[in-house]
Image (cartoon, rainbow, N blue to C red):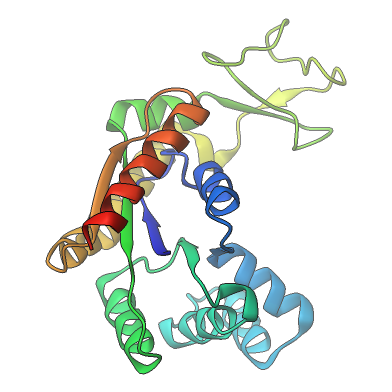
Length: 220
């Protein structure tokens, strides 16, 4: 299957993308990984992206699309892929459609993970990270440390990242609503959108997503 995963910050896209790609045996293609891989390998696109990033500018769509095109042409993506973080805008979605049409392939589904805005804010703003090891992550409501402000694993100080403050989260949501959410309507017009709730245990959400994708695939 060829899938685009969308949803607001805090909906669990990263977690579900990894799990779904593994279950469906297709590569998980995230924009973050694309940038890191191209910059690390010092590809022409990576060098170009880095020049924009170093200057504090947004990387142009054509650079991101070029990276995505290269990745989707790899052998492991021949039978499908899961795009996470791309496309982010209608312009990028249109460019992706043109790219796929050139290859005579099409998307099978756009999986929309829904989460109430207050829940998104609660999920993100409640995160606390260990200063000693950023892989030690806690949550004030869902995974609280035994002692407030202290990492259970190493005893390090727990802190809230600037990006996780409530004001920042709400600004990120505003950007999502204005820039990324419109692609849902764009893909709805093509009959590709499958919407599920991202609430509940991680494994339950994964099974919910797999069931919805299976039904969408059977309907085509």
